[in-house]
Image 1 (cartoon, rainbow, N blue to C red):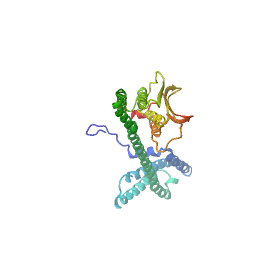
Image 2 (image 1 turned 135 degrees about the vertical axis):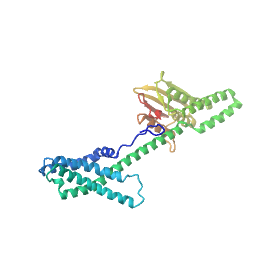
Image 3 (image 1 turned 60 degrees about the horizontal axis):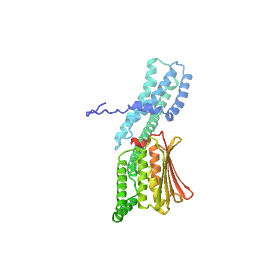
Image 4 (image 1 turned 90 degrees about the vertical axis):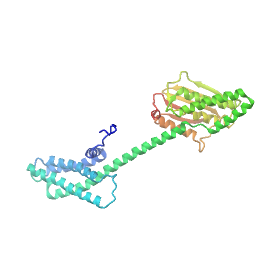
Amino acid sequence: MTSLSGTRMVSPPSLLRSTLRALLVPRLLIPIVVMSVPLVIAQTRLSADPWAGPLGALMCVVFFLLAPASWRALFPPDEPRRTFAAPFGRVIVYAVSGAGTVMIVGSVIPDLLGMQPTLMTSDISLWVSVALFWVGGYGLGHAIDMEQSLARERARAETLRQEAERAQLLALRSHLDPHFLFNTLNAIAEWCREDGETAERATLALSDMLRTVLKGTQVPAWPLDRELELCHTLLRLHRVRDPERLSIDLAIADPLPGLEVPPMVLLPLVENAAKHGPGAGHSGTISLRARAEARNFVFEVDNPGEFRGRRDGGEGLSMVERRLDHAYGGRARFSIEGRGERTVARVAIPLNCTSPEMNA
């Protein structure tokens, strides 16, 4: 079907087809089979007519398919029912159509075929079948509508969850400690009066880093070497501010794996290492190690300062975990631990893993 604007529209499945598809789900199909098979066997054995078995099977198929389809057609779950007359009138239609269907299949058709009386077509059995049509149609139709409504709500909730995560990722990608930026700008202002060359180097490094960060907010992924260069730039800025307390040790594999990663997914680890290492009074070396190990790319940040567990209210580490989990579907691993008087954060990303976030 095509709209006036030329856009192709997908027609919803017919009610009968969607009902049949729902009834074939094992949760509903198994009880239906358990009820129908003994009934058809009894119909065959307790009836003299040779067509008794096929007629019984036809009645079961018609009842279990048409009864819920009739209920769903007359009482759609999304339609508001504001008056008593509307649902009451539909109940009458449902009751009459159900009784008519039973009589046609269980009485008219056998008479046309000249069949002998059978277990399921006796007068008492037909009235029981009418009652079963009414009750079964209501129960199955209501169950199908509830299942489909639940499936739609789950799909909607999943869509909203993904949209919320994407919105959160936009904020996470632009994460950078504002205190560090303000302190660096204040330091540059002081260097402008005392050490123009240092102020110039710091300004250029900060400008380069901020330019890269802004680019990172606009793309779902970028090369691994750009991520590592951003991490190194951040450490250089910290070292410019306090060269006596901080030194940098790089152990970056050459060549690096041809891997793309979500922008700034590793930067918070380096920021955390500088903040809680030299920034907290623990002088020493911050080491960055990046290498391919087995089937993973492994990134480690090693900073001075004993690891005392995660701090309440800290968002940096949780942010890294959330982004890795979202981007790699739980296949990336993050850990942080203490090694003597030092703290080591480690990320392992499968080399053959395409990030779902990169397709966002």
